[in-house]
Image (cartoon, rainbow, N blue to C red; front, side, top):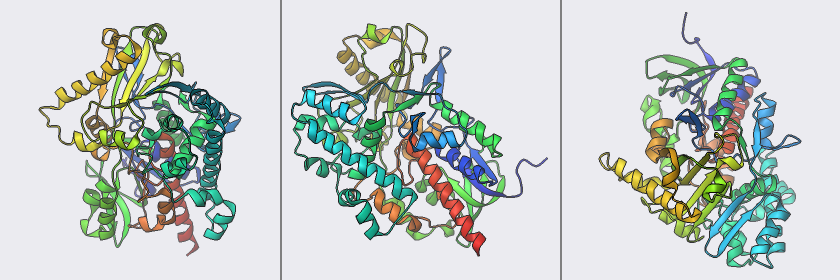
Length: 509
C-alpha cells in the first residue's frame, strides 16, 4: 500500500496552529489535504511537557479573540464552527503592573479598566475610556475590512478613525490624549506581546490588542495549549485530512513559476497544486525552493527588508507551596524598572540582566493545572535573537543558567520569598530550544517586527505582491496578522482563503 496519494489539492508544511487551521478550513470545503509535521506531535510551540509525572504548560500565557460562549470572538467562533471543542477558562484579570511608583491590578471591561487606572492616577478616567473606545472602533474596522475589502473613499466614509490613525504609531496617538506619564505607563505593558516599542508599533496593532484583551478578556484551555493542537488534529483527521508526523519537508518543488509538490527528508516526492508553508519565508526562499533558479529576486529582497521580531527565554517551574503561601497574588505580572519601551526594547538585544519580565501563575486561571499544594509559575522575557547568536556551544549551558538565576532572583525579591527553596521541577526554555523544537528561523516566535515601515495595513493592501511563486502561501507568526497563538489561527485561515480563492479563479477559466 502506498504511503501517500498520487496527488493532493493542498500540502501543508507544519502541523502547528496555523497549519492545522488551514487544514480544517480547506477540509471543510471538501479539499484533499496532507499535513506534514517534522515533530512527533502537532502544535509547534502550542505544547506542554511532563516533569515528575505532572503536565506543565510550555508557552501559552493567554489566548485572545475567544470570548464567552454567548459572545464568541473570531478565533473562538472558528473553533466552534470547525467542531473543535475546547474547554476555555477565563483569565481573572488583564494584568498586574509592577512599575516605578505603581502596583496596580487591572481587569477587563473598558469602564472597569479606566476606573482602575483612574484610582491609581486620578483624573485620567475619561481620557483612558475615550482611548479604549477608539481602540474598539479601530478593532471593528480591522475585522470588517479583513473580510470585506473596500475602496479608499468608502473606507474613509465608513471607517474614518481607522483611516485617520493608520499612519501613526501607538505612541503618537496616545500622546494626543495628554495623559499623565503614570497613566501611559499603565497602558503600555502589553507592548511585549507584540514585540515592538510604542514608538514603532502601529496604532492599528495596539488598538486591536487592547480592544480584544481589555474588552473581552483572555482565556486559556483547561488542558493547556496542547489541547488546542490535539483537538484540531483529531478533528482534521475526522474530516479527511491526512496528517503525517516525523516527516520533515526539505524541498518545495517549483516549475515555471508555480509549485507542484514537495520532497521530504526521507526522499518522498509528493505532488499537489498548492503548498501552505509554516516555515519562515527566510528559510523557504534561501534553502527550500527546488530548483533555486525558481526563487524570484524580489523574494530575497523582501525577506532581507523585514526585521525579525523577538524570540523567547522562559523559566517554567513547579513549586512546592500554594501561590498565597509564596506571596503570589496575581495571574499575570508585568514588572520592570521603567516603562520606556524604547529603552526596554534595546535592553532585549543582549543577554541580560533583563529589566522587563512577565510572570504567570497558572493556578489563578486553572486551579486544577497542578496537584493541590503546588504552584505552576513561569517567568518569561522576550529577547531579540541578536545576543543569543553570539553564545558559543561551550558557553551555552553556563549562560542560560545565569540568565535563569537572575530572573528567579528578581521575582524572589518581588514576592519576598526565595523561589529556589521551593522548586520541585524546572525547565529553562531559550531561543535555541525554540529553534531546535519548532524549527523556527533564529528561534523566532514573533515573526516579523510590527513597525511603521512594515505596516500591517500596507501588507493587507499589497498581499498579492507577496505571492511570488504561484500556489505558495505562508501561514504562521511570519504571516500578515503577526504573532501570537490567536493570530496564528487567523493567519492559517487567511492562507486557506487565499488558496480557495485561487481555486475558484482557476475553475472559472
